[in-house]
Length: 243
Image 1 (spheres, one colour):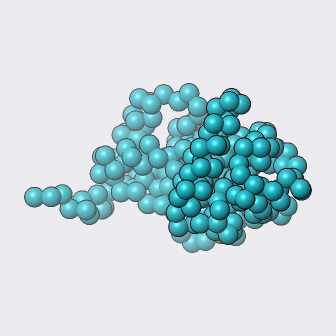
Image 2: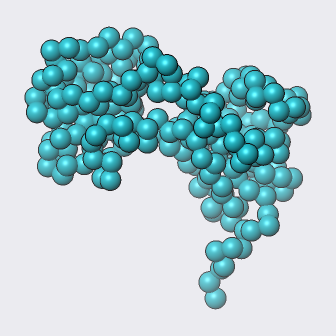
Image 3: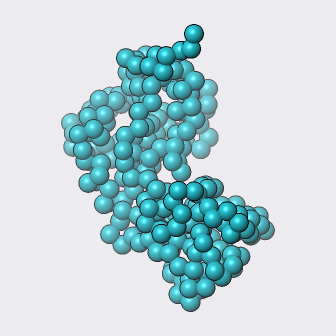
């Protein structure tokens, strides 16, 4: 007999909590569902404990910051320690997962934690919130029904050019939008490489500083971008390539 899909109901839940992308995110996060969950969860897995505590404090929801049990998902985190944290605390109450910005697991850490939950028949609940990838696709005018997200671009010049050449060919052949990100201080370098490698007729969407007043989402052909290339600086961006 197959296990019931509702077997995990009634137990503690893994809650995937969105965080603001920028100052304009507060409106879409200030709702009953978000506030109810963030005030009830006492156990958290987050990228940076300090910035998470600062954000929770800014909500002014009378949350006891010192009582929160937090596992920090930094770059060199201990996987065994994480699994122990999850195993021990899921029996005490819901566990929240939050990245630095956007929806955890979407262009951000969190997927391996929800994978652990599925493996252990723990219910997973995703709270609605801003996702830079989805916002960029929605506003780009490119193919949002068929796309490939590559994550971070390679750093070394030769690997980067080879990678961009391949996604350009894939885009021309399939029509799938190709999405990628880069560390903010390398955004101008990535845009220059895109303009250098991709065919003139392909389109590039630059979605920069989303949910900030000065943010923009702009789609141009490679040829058009070359005539008027923006200076991105250290602002976070999503780059989309389409036809």
